[in-house]
Length: 78
Image 1 (cartoon, rainbow, N blue to C red):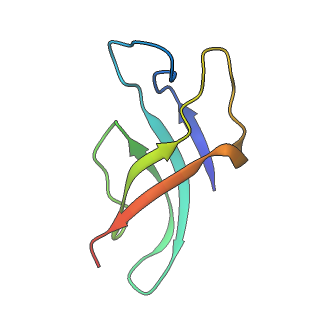
Image 2 (image 1 turned 90 degrees about the horizontal axis):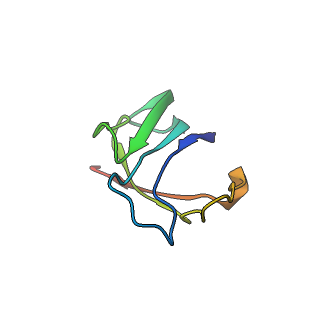
């Protein structure tokens, strides 16, 4: 649905903390149906049968990414 938080370390920066990305997602499948929030680099939370494992691109300092710029990668255990 949308990336609701992106505090990841910018691509050209050196950070003490990697930051985190939070996304609101909706699933409509055989094993799970519903809407929830899932995180990358934060709480290791699965949503139904999927887990968020990557989000790109990393922004640059002072750059705000548009929702359409994000590509989220998930894995499933089914």
